Image 1 (cartoon, rainbow, N blue to C red):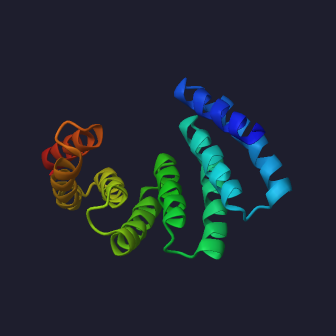
Image 2: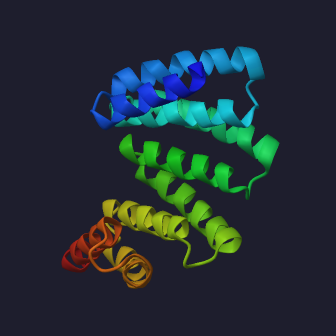
Amino acid sequence: EATEAAEALGAAQRAAGDHAGAAETYAVLLRAQQEEFGPKDPETLATANRVATALRASGNYGEAAAMYSQTLTIRRQVLGPDHPETLVSENNLALALRSQGNHAAATRMFSVTLARRRRVLGDRHPVTLRSAHDLAISLLSQGKPGEAAQLLEWVVQDRRELLGPDHPETLSSSRALVASLNAG
């Protein structure tokens, strides 16, 4: 019950825009879970991911990247490199690297994650499309609008079919496609 209450509080804090407060709430829960269940427990790892996500949202990119990296290392050991939760950690670390301005490292990691997600989940899975979108944004940030546009054309087409033309993710990819075409 205490775990559920802490998770609910952290989620409410994030929803209210208090990402630093959410990070603190999740960090307290993480310490308790590490003591009770150990650092390799799936729930402990999920909470570590929540801490890192809240840190990234509050602008603490270095701390977020460190925590995502730690979580990724453990998930690779425990779950394997192609497990969906491992791929979540990998994609999240790439997001943190991009937030730090390390676009080259982020692009490499997004590329690897996208290849794995395509193999594990398929080309049309919403999470695979999210990875392709993230990679395209990194490519655009690196001044590679042509490569970004190629990815985004695929993402926009599949998101329109799967999610609908007015879905926020479809619209986000459509805007990014327009930006990449204008930049090219």
